[in-house]
Length: 142
Image (tube, rainbow, N blue to C red; front, side):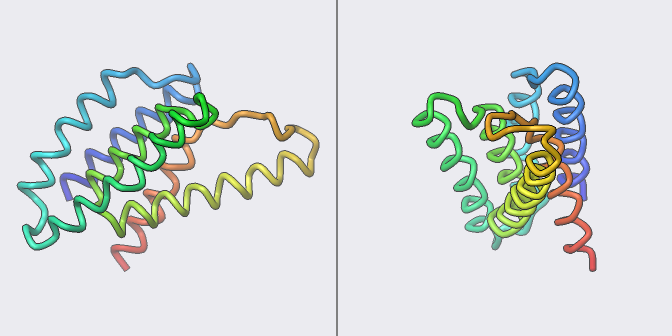
């Protein structure tokens, strides 16, 4: 429960900065990333350690894509996905990230169809990742 609350705080603060300034302070990533590792080891089931390690995979893949694409996919978004993986583990992180990507896709189609955006329109990802996390948490509680 404490890890979910901390991830919610991280994603909410990140959303605020992403929407207002189009940038999330590096200190936010550092604080929540470093805090997440020992907290998850303390509060998560030790048998789920493999799942916790798998949670890092999506973030690492997105960091690689960010590096290869010269930042077309933001490094901040990739770090947010990595931190989400630290807190949620493999299955929870995969669900939250895929849900966020789906919501982003729907939103992008709406912008394109309504002619309010183009294929070059950049969207902040943290609000969508927060939405994916909330949906994941609701699904985990049901």
